[in-house]
Every structure is written in C-alpha cells, then in structure tokens.
Length: 319
Ligand code: CP
Image 1 (tube, rainbow, N blue to C red):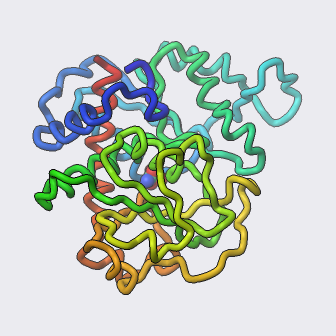
Image 2: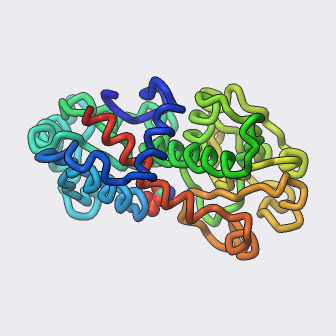
C-alpha cells in the first residue's frame, strides 16, 4: 500500500480486516517492524481517538511517533499554487511538506473541510498537496470528505460482532441512519462508511435520512436509500448512527420532519441490532442515554478497535 486516504487504496478489504483482527489477537507480533522508523502525525483539527489509537498502534509496531498540532501550534500554511503570500499564511506546503518527508517515514494528517466551498472540500486539496510534496506515504487521519481509518474500524467491528452471532452464512443488514445535531458537521464519516461498505460488498446496505440530506452518489452508489427511517430499520443487524450536514445545499442544516433520534422503541423494529457511532456523540441529541448505555451499544468496542485498524494500515504502509 502506497497511501491510505480512501477505500480505493486497499486492494483486498477482507484481507486488511483479517490482518487487523490478527493484531487484536496478538498486538506485539510485529513489534520490530517499525524499528528506527518514525510516523509524523499532523493535526490541523482536534482529535482524541484517532490521535491516541494511531500512537498506540505505531508503538506496537516499534515505531516512534511525533505529534504536531499544526492547527494550534504551527505556522499558518498556504496551499494555493502561485499564491502571493501577503495575507495571514506564513509558510507554503511545498516548503514544509518535503522537510517532513525527510524527518519521517510516514506522514499522517487530519484536516477537516471548511463546509463553505463544496468544490474545494471535495477536491481534497490539502491532503493532495501533502501527498504531492512530502515524497513519503501519506495516511489520512480524516480528511475533507473521508475518514478511512474509522470506516476500516467499523468493518472490523461488524465482522467480529457478526461472526460472534454464528450468523456467518448470510450477509448482515447494515443501516446508516442520519441523526440530529446542534451544528453543521462534515459528511466525512457517512461518505466514508458508505464507500467502504459498498466496496466491501458483504452487507445488505441501507442509508436513511430526511430529504435534503442526500450524500454524494460517488459514495452511496450500491446502497438502498430509504427516506422512511422506520422502514429502513426493519430487520437491521447493525445500525450506524451519524449526523451530517447537507451536500446539495452545501454545509447547511435543512429543516426536517419527524423525530430522527433513535429510541428503544425504534430498535424494537430491528433484528436486535447492534448500535454503532464513531464518537464523539452528543448525548440525548444524536443518541439517547438509553441506547448508548443499553445492551445493544457496541460503541466502546468500536472505538477500541481503532488501534487494530491503525496497526494494520501502518504495517501495510511499512511493508
Ligand atoms: N472518531 C474519531 O475520529 O474520533 P476523534 O475525532 O476523537 O479522533
């Protein structure tokens, strides 16, 4: 693997899931693979799980990690080619990235979208500029439109939970449901989940959301879109809950009808579905306490699996 910014960078998704579950069973099996190697983690935006799990994963491979909170502690970076830098940006990515390429063996980057200019965000300009100028493998820690480490984690979690139910002959029904939120959030997690589940192909996949919250077809193609949440939830084995802002009227929060927050009553329509969320979650806005603290929630298992996803990917980039 040369880079990890989307599902398209992975030749064999089931093999990567198996590799991650192998690390879960034996975390230190490759403890010298990354000896004398360094991963630089650049955070242009905040993180808890991604930052910590990437560090743990790299350490289990014998790598050194260097964290740089560029957003808070670094120079303001310029990404436009030919920019006349007479404004607030201090350093061009074409000067900064090659230096990082010399310091590190892998460059990991988190950069959120601005949610103002859809073309700019969906062009993935920032992470592409790092790929262009760093000269080393780039690992996405969540970019403007995708969150591949989260999605790989989600497939790992679905796989191990499904295997534990002894239902291994049939595909699980997986439902991605929109949930309310107090502010406009990126589409990254939902886009990425849709891209990975479709590329994986081992699920009956349904996406449900209010009208106006359609995701880009680039990612959803292959899934069933169902505007009626109750219909979508029927017989679900896994329900993935996530808010996102609108793609069409980009970055806005169109008004919607009905109550989209999950309740135990709605879960009663499912096949005793496991509940997933990438976290952080706004309790009693996106998801109720009764669901999050209830027996069907696998959010802690899911977040814990971030380590094994990161370890499988870093290991593949090193190899
Ligand atoms: N799910 C996720 O990416 O968590 P963080 O934002 O805390 O890294």
